[in-house]
Image (cartoon, rainbow, N blue to C red; front, top):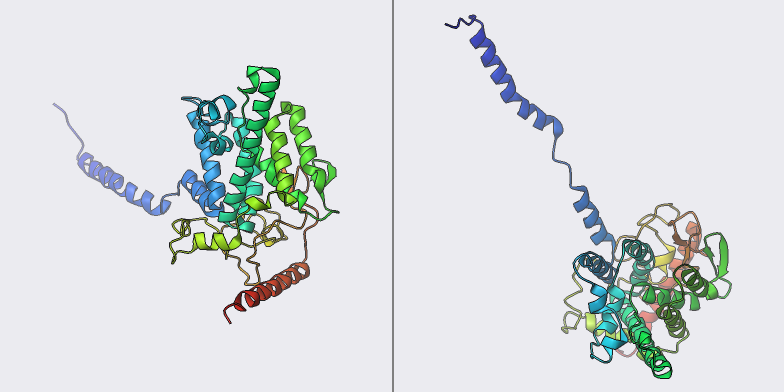
Length: 362
């Protein structure tokens, strides 16, 4: 019934052979599969962000997404009614890790990635964690005391329902610590204004109060930061020798299990003030890149191992061409000679420290 031309089977075989070769040709032309951009971004985040800073940011992200199912603020925020009268004291520690909206999450990452990364690289992860939780505990205890006093004086239950939550309660205190230890002539840029470093946290607090209204936890955070910077809380500071024992793996220190984790900055790896002066965003000090620098030991053996806060301008809000909204201060060395002199002085201090530590052994 059907008559096919003689050439039809030949053409059919050629078509099938060509189709079988196409996948091999496509695979050879495409090369290896492209990496997953989400996985690549996460690996870069883990590699470039110190451990404690990463844990804090991860906790805020988790609290934000759990907010779609239940209210983490109701369970974890520092509320006098629950913290004191129901004895839920864990809220004193968990309140800074709460994020309730996407705008707060954005500003949390923008602020803490700038200040937290550099501070942890400067001090070391252990001392940075001690600073973070010292400011958190003191600020929240003062908040509870003032709320109870106001409730007793006014008999208003609204003070018992007051809330202290969010990372900026602690971050404002960290900024106040930095500014209180900066040189007197240091200035920081707030958008288009230059503010003396000593008053920069107060101006920043006034700006927050202008947009979101005055908040008692923010005010207490700044006050506690100033008190910490001026040495009023020295009795609560952890000694460097104690931290070294915590990190000592041979002696089974309580933090020895964290030392080998990605991003943990030990006291020996802490770069001191050089965390602010050398490198920004993993680039050279004269480059214009932004973002946190990679977490690693100082590349120069002259880097100081004594943790401290920056003695230069630190970081500013909204100024400069580097770093975007939170950028560097104005008192940073920009030439190779200035950085070399700084490293030479750091090496001399380190040699003196080693000589002093070696004397008792003699």
